[in-house]
Image 1 (cartoon, rainbow, N blue to C red):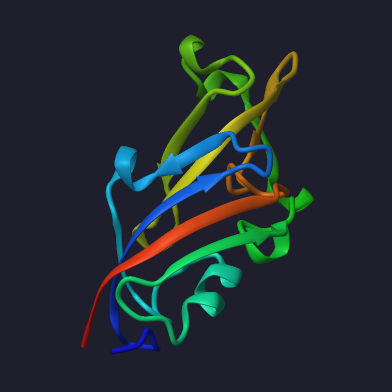
Image 2: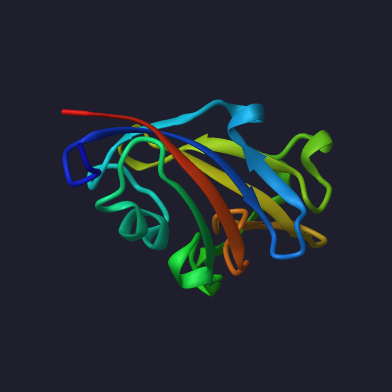
Length: 141
């Protein structure tokens, strides 16, 4: 059986930077199980998986536009500083909020100003080249 739209797929993976720095892995976060073509995966990964079978291993070096996207300047927004607890008022603080339609949206504190906080709603890996090492471990209808 091959990976194609509508198939349920399970992958073991590692994501790293081109210099080899580990970002995430199945060993840390668990395998990925998803419905191919119906789940939001990095586009370069999704395209590259089509036609692969159980046991296939891939190493993909992806540019930002094929991975987690380029940095969108419109994804930076200012909010009143008073809306945040003191523990969140440091650059790099990351949290999640409920987004539209019940989705979870991750943000990172990008800058702190006198009266406002600038939040970055880009994916944490936006703008980065990444390397995916994946092994197909299961495919089903």
